[in-house]
Image (tube, rainbow, N blue to C red; front, side, top):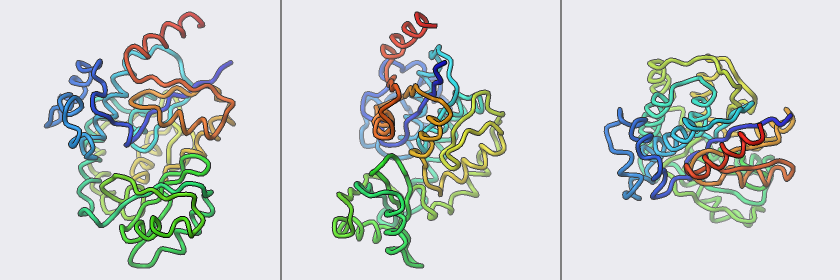
Length: 303
């Protein structure tokens, strides 16, 4: 029997015009925020690129599609921010609460460091052990650089102080990387530098109800299926300053018998990463209502 995982994208998948066919659902999910999410998605590219708006935009897009998703699934997973949509799918938190939580998360992440203090870059062509060794070599007591997103073979994102990211971008080829590309982000996400916001974020999410997962969620921190509400909540805090172990998570899902990966939300980034991890699985991307209706019809015919 086919085992299926639902995947939810993270930051970087946003684009102008996203969720244009889901405006009513997005409005309902984001009504408690103090800005007009639908208007920003439609016509404010600059704001949409700021993490405090990007995060609720992506999660509300995924959650709006999820409301109409009919098929059964065995696991959920999200990439960084996408973990919150995965928790909605798994029955851990309400969709409206997920949107409020990521709006706060985005605000805290955006305000943690002034521009120019922290940054991120994609390292292409090296394996994780090589990247870890490079980071240890470059880091000092005053300035760190650390693996942040372990996405797929040969694609690892690093995070840390701007000076160290600049050093790696400049000398990456000499250090053995095929390429090192600076990322357009406003801080050193998923590095130990983000511990500065952990206490405030932890206090904020105490105000929301977390239930045990009805469907196991493979969390970024452990790369393992989790169902216990307290464990899930603790790992959401740790996720702020820990690497996203996406490649390991996908490998673990395949070992658990998953053969079908369904990406729900803007873009097709995760599907592309899964293809680089395994050629032996089926990948579907659902970005629009039209995609979803086609998927639901097909599923009903075969179930």
